[in-house]
Image (cartoon, rainbow, N blue to C red; front, side, top):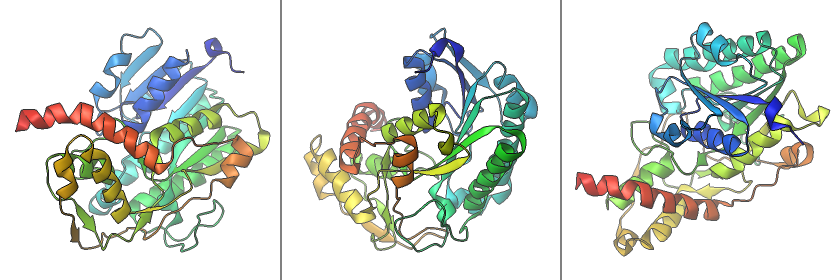
Amino acid sequence: MQHTQSIKILITGGAGFIGSSLCEYFLGKGYAVVCLDNLATGHKKNIEPLLQNPGFTFIEGDIRNPEDCAKAVTGVTHVLHEAALGSVPRSIKDPVTTNDVNIGGFLNMLVASRDAGVKRFVYAASSSTYGDSKALPKVEDKIGKPLSPYAITKYVNELYADIFSRTYGLETIGLRYFNVFGRRQDPNGAYAAVIPKFVMQLMQHQSPVINGDGSYSRDFTYIDNVVQMNELALFSDNPKAVNAVYNTAFGERTTLNELVENLKNYLSVYDPQIANVQIEYGPERAGDIPHSLASIDKAKELLGYNPHYSFSRGVEEAVGWYWENLKPLIAEKE
């Protein structure tokens, strides 16, 4: 059992969707938490309720700045590195910035963590690392060629983490996230994830546009499964579990057509008209992987991972949160 008093956790990107859930969770468990975020894609409102907590420190800073990284890791024992520029399309449009943040920033954080004597560095890896590998389910040691600049950056993170473990003795664990969704995921912006974007459109009776024919499938993973995985990775005392990467998913796949039907069903509970909203189809998106499905056997065996939220249960929870939090904003616009 961990003694919370002796542990201080830095969460980079802590004002973002995943990061803010991690900040909230670990603060609630009694740990001291430091949040580093430049608020480029994160939002101060995500951590607003935490700012009054004496165990919480917010640093507005950028992982591209080594001084900010060094300041953030002061006195820190464990790091959860969530900060990154997500989105395959964004990386295709602007590969340089994606590279600067996701590789340069990642290396800065590794160096700062090494120099501060951090015990363990757990980082957000990505299912995009599987690239053009057609094998299903995805198993950690079999990857293909990356299909986007974003995927390259996340693979390079894994290579750097491995080197830092071997060369400097920094304990690292990478979590390959598979299409994470849930509360506080931003529905706005050009690179919004598909679930919050579709929910927002359906709530306004607008037709969501599916890229391709809707047969592409994903292993949609509810946020609370991801929180569980981060906690297990952070505190596992299994020596075989360290210096490794793990799929972080539920282990089932859902097509985009099935996704939209689920969203319509759960949203129709609140507004029956949503059941009648038509779906539109557009061209396939460059860099997209057709199918994604994780094997979670390794995480179960070495970390004791046991995801509680199926896709359906997660969607029901997420839709409830969105209805409560987005409906007033939509009503204001109308």
